[in-house]
Image (cartoon, rainbow, N blue to C red; front, side, top):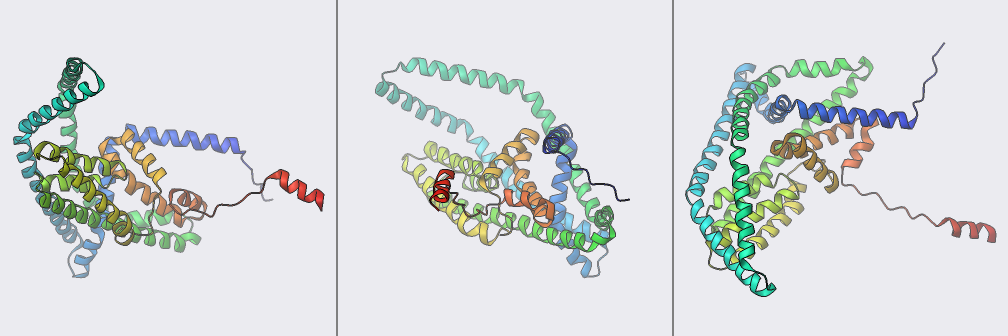
Length: 370
């Protein structure tokens, strides 16, 4: 006798979904120290997998191929880090002068604004001094937390390479585990889903890297042509912030505009930066992202912002950078699994045709006339 299929009511399914979501978010927050390095390692391992396969096809031992790939990655990251540190040291040396110039400019703006709006400039200065003192006190209190955070980052820097090596080494075991989770009748479909998802994820992540390099070159060239100081540092920071959709672009253009206002005699340079960065953003949105970044992965603005806010709330700044790649991976998996396809459609930016629904009263009148 075949047992009858039990239909779970909608309210029960909704409750299970909400409780499961809250539990998942709580686990992600509590275990973030463990999860963040693993997520970074998985993303980097996916990117390095074709490189490892390249060396393996050249008859190089798999372990040696993984070590070579990790060394090449380390050298690239070390060179990139050395460039940022050298530029940041120059910026740090000039920081007091920039603060002094910014203070003078701010005082001029306050004086002009107080005359125009008939306000007492002394009250504005007192409020700024009070706010500045509170910020300094909070910064001093946060030194201990910063040291703990730096210590955690150092631990992560040691853990991530180990995770990457182990993920690449045990990749056949992990893939076989995924197959064994499902019935044998579904193995062919699982293999197809895993293969397609892995390929598209690699294309997407590689596209993000290429996009970041192109945006950095365009922004650095723009700032050098305009003669803005610290062009290399600001261009690299802007390209990295560009990985955070919508919010990152605003911060990326605000930084060079502030430097231009402080270091240049004319305020027109800040407007030039704004105009050219806007053109770069148009090029990025209309050409680089559709052509270079994997076109199959398109996340709509609503869920991009939600993912960034959730990532920031759970994991801080690393969560903001990881939120979009993770959401893209989730969308890819949803797109290849039949029951989850509605979720993949919800995360995407494909707009359905708007259905025109006729008013009920008009339909009733037509029926009566007939």
